[in-house]
Image (cartoon, rainbow, N blue to C red):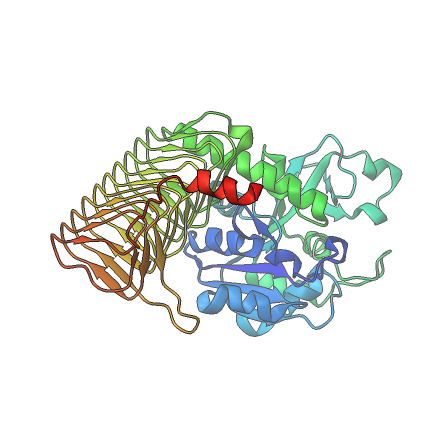
Length: 458
């Protein structure tokens, strides 16, 4: 049977008090709407239609051509939003899932079970429900004597008796697609909000003699939506906890999960240890048996196995096997640290490749540089890569030795096995195996301080 999905993402999100469209707010590294679409694409659906309104262009740019879009010019309620999908879905056979764009905690297995339950009960509509000890603010599920759903009553329209019901709608539904669009024309807006509610379709179907079922999830967080920054932070915490627990079950050690921040798309192999106050962001991939942190911030990096990173910031870079980074290193995008190499304290790399087993141990800046294998870069070495107009590259070939406090004025090449004396400012290429000394010869003036003091007395 064909399956479709409608994602309701047209709400303005006024209570967020933000210029950013509500469903574009990130949770664990990516927008809420992206979480939903990524999940739906795992279900092999025939059509995914995202209903947009405020901020439509931002959502379209984020999702691209992975989905279809329907535009809701006025936010007149959830039933009105679904009706905007007529051009894409009306007249098609199959089951349509309706889900809100701000509920990224729903699980793939829950949606699969919802589809299966809907079909097994031969229902025309099925609502995903859950139990809340305090259901304030949610639509209450009112069942009939057979245990099926009679209707869903919104908080503002509920009687005192109905408000005592703890079973709530998560806002996630399965419908027979043809019946859904036939029933939408009968939805009225005679309620406290003056809106067209999608749950009213359930009551309409019930009056037509159709079966309306309910499938209950035991995890109330799956139906959690976001209306303000407080709820956004709560959702972030729930998802972060779920992510951390999944990594631990997969063989990763988190010393303190409560102070470990891992984005949804991060991959970590077994036997890696993550220390507290570590942020792993974006599409970072970490190999096995690494030690990351404490206080590491890693974004969109490939970290190979047996790497150690301590109190450092890395972005858009590759760190080879058995390399060591930190403490207090800053590795910027398009950099690569080779196997067994060391990047030490207060070292900054920008668009630079460090070869295998090379060392940049202290207080250096290497920008737009190519460093070969087995190179030693001393303390305080600077590649002077910018002339005020253009950036230039520096090449340091294999087995070279760069002494402390050296300036390499790019473009320049230090040949294989060459030495550069400490304190030099290198403006010309250094031949292989050569020693370059580019500093004024030291002069010692005997008894200088004695003579100076005599002059001061006079």
